[in-house]
Image (cartoon, rainbow, N blue to C red; front, side, top):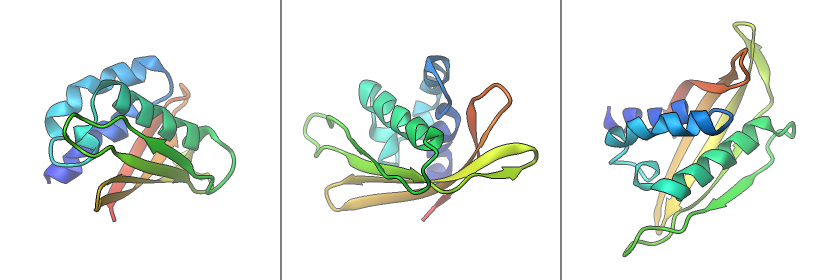
Length: 130
């Protein structure tokens, strides 16, 4: 359950624009047991911008690599995201998004379904840890 909640922050913060990123700060308590949960400040913002880039890019499957600075005493985090073809669901354009984060030999892979709301923001409709 914790790992499910951990990525709810990602689901709710991967929205277009700075206000969406600012609203993600309240999810830190749920993110402690995932690699994503270890991201702080500029690393988290950088990863979130990479996810938005993938969702907004019209190319299906285009990979967007990401590298974080890493925390003191820990190996740097790396990852990549890519989105599949868009389809319509409940009158909204939606895209499956695949995210991978790595630290050393630890990999976390997630699949999300993001839908674009009328205000232009992407909101996750579902998530699965692979």
